[in-house]
Length: 117
Image (tube, rainbow, N blue to C red):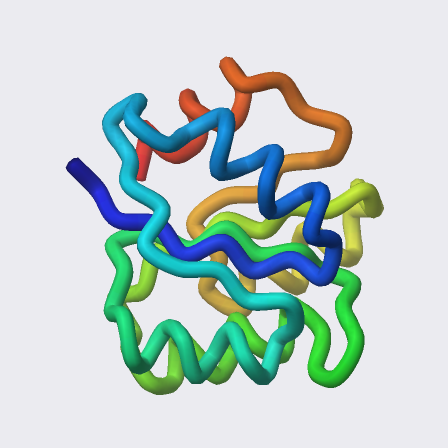
């Protein structure tokens, strides 16, 4: 079972993602409410996959992604955001994201995206 760290400033979204993926081939081993905390949790927990919101207080998701990839070039990070603009997607992918999910998303969409990692 793949381990997952969920990073999102919305507690509701963290609960939603956990509910959609836990016990469906994935085990959520941690969560963080901002980018800074997410980077620290990544280093501590070493999850197989990270889901990360783009827009958060402190450092945003793309900056947190860059820090995680600098620490672990093999990190598997999926960006999750309501912002589907091409520039944000391109920046995230160029920074090392393995995928991008646009909110709102279905359980099937998130499971398929995580399953590809």
